[in-house]
Each structure stands twice: as structure tokens, then as C-alpha cells.
Amino acid sequence: MNIVTVTLLCLVIAQLAYSQEATQREKATVGHDEIIRQLRAAYAAFNRGDFDAAVAALDPKIEWTEPTEFPGGGACHGREAVKKYLMQSGADGQRAAANLNDS
Image 1 (cartoon, rainbow, N blue to C red):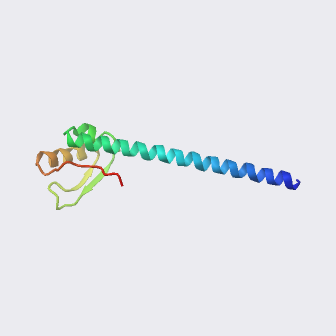
Image 2 (cartoon, rainbow, N blue to C red; image 1 turned 180 degrees about the horizontal axis):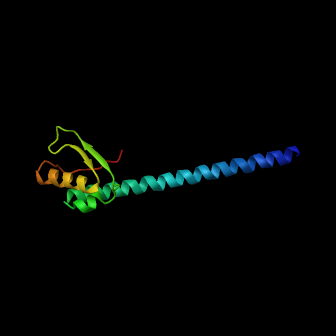
């Protein structure tokens, strides 16, 4: 191999690595944007009392823990248990409007 071939090979490898990194950054951005969208939708659903929609994006096997000092606090296992906890906290009038701030 001559120096031109080696240089060209290095440039091609660098370009491939950069392209893969850019693709991963794009996927991460899309993933981040989708997560924010889902969080906003969940908060909005919670605030309007739509608990089915509030937990829809959660993993069915979620483990949700609230401080035991909170009414109904402790561990919830599964989407239905989380929904029950959120419904209880909303029904008890202890819930202020939940917000998701951009930070």
C-alpha cells in the first residue's frame, strides 16, 4: 500500500465513524424529544384526571416508589398499581397541578 491509499483508507474510516456518531446523536435527539413529548402528555393527563392516559407510557412492570411519609406512599408494582396510587393522591385533594419544566 502506498501513502495515498493509506490516507484514503483513514479518511473513509473516519467518515464512517463520524456518520455513525451523527446517526447516534440524531437517534438520541429523537429519543429525547419523544420522551419529553410522552412526559408532557402524561402530566397533562394527570392534571385532567385521565389516569389511564397518565400511565399509558409506563412499562407494564414498573416499580414506582414514593416516600412512605406521603399518604399512600411506598412501593407500587405494575402500571395498574401506579394508576391506583395516582388516583388516590388525586382524589385525596393532595395533588397540586403537576408541571414539567424545561431545564
